[in-house]
Image 1: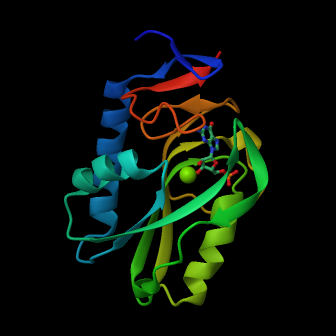
Image 2: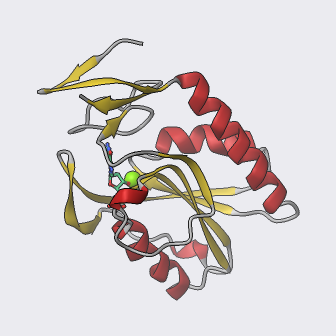
Image 3: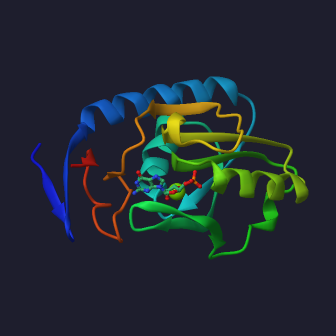
Length: 177
Ligand code: 5GP
Ligand code: MG
């Protein structure tokens, strides 16, 4: 893996494709055991979690439903301090076991904003599956049931995560130099 340049910034390899896929498989196995006999609904937070979700859902191999929401809270390489909901919350989540699929938990603001709304529309249960978590950046209290990797408070791209819409196609994860 070599370094990559996106817009004005350089990024260096951080998590290899093989490491990511191995960990995603473990999370899938764990979800399959925990949701055995149920048909959960994966709620994928666009856009960043799309690539992770595609691999995670196939790794679980269990019957499920799938829906999406688009939320945005980042500007450039920092949290903007506000969460923007670009699409409406799907109403069909009422009565469902919802697994929110996120790319990364940073301050925790996005999930702190979303979870009460899922409860308000009558989700039967909620859980969070996130590929990455930055414990040192977290400001909002959350129950994180499924975490791929805990990482330092640095800006990362790849495997769905972008810098100004670039870098999502990278199979590995890279960190800002
Ligand atoms: P939070 O609301 O937890 O502060 O931030 C969550 C969202 O911010 C993530 O879903 C992601 O879109 C974005 N984000 C946080 N940290 C990073 C990062 O290191 N790289 C990228 N590309 N996005 C990030
Ligand atoms: Mg996200």
